[in-house]
Image (cartoon, rainbow over the protein chains, first blue to last red):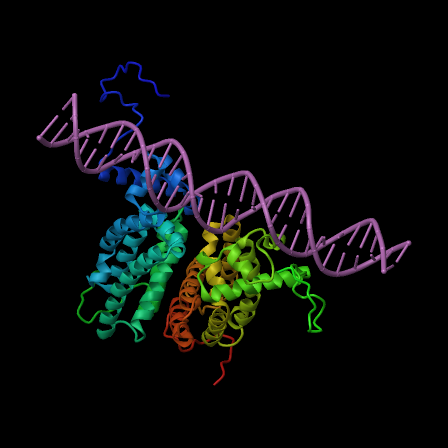
Length: 226
Length: 226
DNA sequence: AGTAGTATCTGACGCCATGTCAGTAAGCAA
DNA sequence: TTGCTTACTGACATGGCGTCAGATACTACT
């Protein structure tokens, strides 16, 4: 194992050294990508720090130099994917174009983010009840969606497009719906059918907000295409 | 401690005995009620077998005589409350009376069950990802709701009352919605406002299924009251 | 009453994952 | 080369879990 017999390659000197040394950023990245790789294949409950670090060039204790525990690692992963998801969900949130079509676009973006990073969200959601700090982070994450969605709802209520009800509660419920369905469908392999899921979610949102089948709604100011 | 000095009371002989003895059923009940008591006050993550058994007259190892582990205990609690919830949800599921009113009644029953036993459901939902067996039980529990609801949806689609869409997917999504919202609102103290939650859920179900505000729908065969 | 038999119960053990720490080794600067 | 900083690791202590052999309560039979 600890061989150092002549390497024919011209690789950097004696690579089989007992110790590797990393830059802090490099090490962090190596650890997080080991985690992500693992979570695509196994549920969070099977992730131990030993397992995790076995997927890196570092030893187990090195983990604690970069993260306080597994939950903090998940928190950091969540921050990364939240960024992405918020961008893809922009159209309806920003109030661009015809509402029902824009809503579909936004939901499609959220669905796609889950197709790409579902296991991360799933791990966070599953681990959140186990750790007060991560639980707070997850609540805050969902809360920001509630903020964005309820603001949009309130605006469209003011415009008379959306029925009257408690906008905040409705936003909270619809977001919880999305989270539950998306985690179930895309949180682990094999993933579900994105189109079918999108259809279902869209139908519910439209029914709840606009009170009609998912076709089209007349906006006071907007001019729809087709 | 192991005194046997004369007791002045006429209580059953030498009650300070080191050991108590129970009937299997009595012991099980003592354990489960200790668990329920605990879960009303603390999250599942803080429940250890030591803590649990400290709330009984038994010692820690005795736990294993009645349950394989905490997850199996939760599974047994789930079975008990499922019974109750199914009964209270009967009206709409059974297709009695005017659909939208019946739906509200059923949802109200489900809400009430969560008001009464929320922490149990919450604990099960939180613990399910940690144990394959409990996860199966939880999925099966939700699956039975999906069965019942999608059957009802399909029946009303056939009657032309409900729009056309994938009934199974819709049932699954709506049930997931209920679970997420109800666990968040009633899974821990302080609990939320049952009426407000009911309004929100009802509005979403009605919007999704009947495509209208939560008032009333005309049934081909039914004669509504009032 | 005494005694054998059975079922319940518990102290004490081994196991495993976590988190910590003192000590070691890699890279850098003078 | 020397010495310093920083990354890293082997080894340890802790705590919950699950098990088991032995101890104890209760029952039934003589």
